[in-house]
Image (cartoon, rainbow over all chains, first blue to last red; front, top):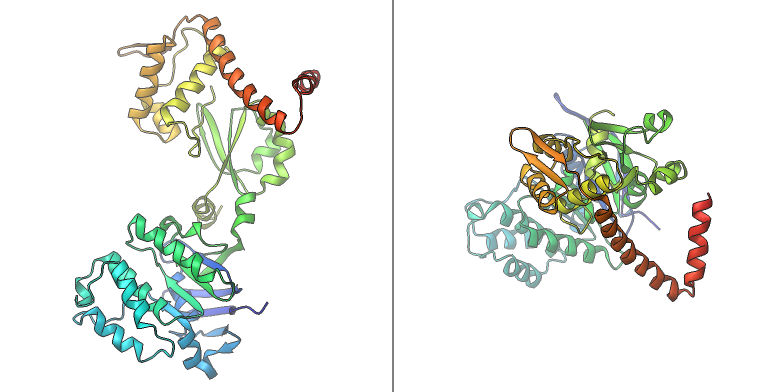
Amino acid sequence: MEPILEAHDLNKRYPEFSLTNVSLETLPGTITGIFGPNGAGKTTLVKLLAGQIPADSGTVRLFGLDYQDNEKEIKDRIGYAPQEHPYYPDQPVAYTARYAARFYSRWDGGLFHRLLERFRINPEKKFRFLSAGQKTLFSLALALSHQPDLLLLDEPAAGLDDAHRRFLFDTLRGFVANGEKAAVVCSHVSEGLDEVAERVLFIDNGAPLLAAEKEELLARWKWLHFRDNALDASLLAQLKSISRHPFGSAGLCDDFPALREQLAGPMAAGDVKVENARLADVLIHLSQGG
Amino acid sequence: MFITLSPSSPEPMYKQITNQIRDAIASGDLAANERLPSVRELAEALKASAITIKRAYLDLENEGCIITRPGLGAFVSKIDRGRLRERKLEEFRLELTRIVKTGAKFSISADDLVRIIRGIKEE
């Protein structure tokens, strides 16, 4: 299967920040999540992927094309929703939509208006009077309405209430469901996008920390809660982020299947309990240099 | 004592705590007159709220498992362990019901299960 998006060894240097050696591949039918703490370089990476800024080195190819030769075609086929909204603040949102419609060959005005209605956004309202969540939803509506083959969404859950967040997740799953399109979203994990992403890329300080299939990652990373003296020293040495308290201790393990046999006894005796880790646990551990 | 809270459990947090402390008393892990951690200590360790811990302690006190002495803390009371054992037996009965019924679906008889249990005991 041909990847929809391929990025290799991307580098971008700013006076105070650099993005270094980030690679990413997105296959049709998948949702990729780029996660990292504040200031990790998520927005810079998405801007590079969306062709908003040029990389200092490295390559980006979308649909097998590169921005240098096919910028117009690529941009027609990607739905990029930036975090900072570039829309006219004092114009009604319908105006921005008419403006955007001229740039896209597959613009679907009917879809756009249905989405606005669903989001309860009055098309005559000036953009700057929308709430933070509505601005995010407006961006999403614009990105979806020109029927792209790839969605590139920068913090798409920012400011959304629970119901709209669920709508966003369902929309993303539906978007990639026919196996031909793909989505790349970036977020700090707590917004809940870790639920929908199948492939995850963690970045921090502009550098990649880890790239993995989410299910594989979460099958390996588990929290172990254990009674004092229930684990021998060699097992204990393999745990990370250990916290001790008088009523048992807890630590993260990064390869549960490998430890399973050793843990079977203490687990059966109730001296060790295993809990699923969340992506946020893994990311916090890795970004804090464990 | 070993207490953990499971966020994925359907049991509310205060119940997870009362169950584990009651079990620790029933199994002898906690002895009569032993002092329990303070509400604050336990709340901090389990990352739970003080209200949750207080609720758990209150329930345990109403059951007669612990006694709180104002200013001194909570202590394990001299409870009849036989009564706690009865309660545990009832829990086992429920768990075994589930296992026996699941076994029946796969034509695993009660005798098969008994053989398995004997086998585990001999290990």
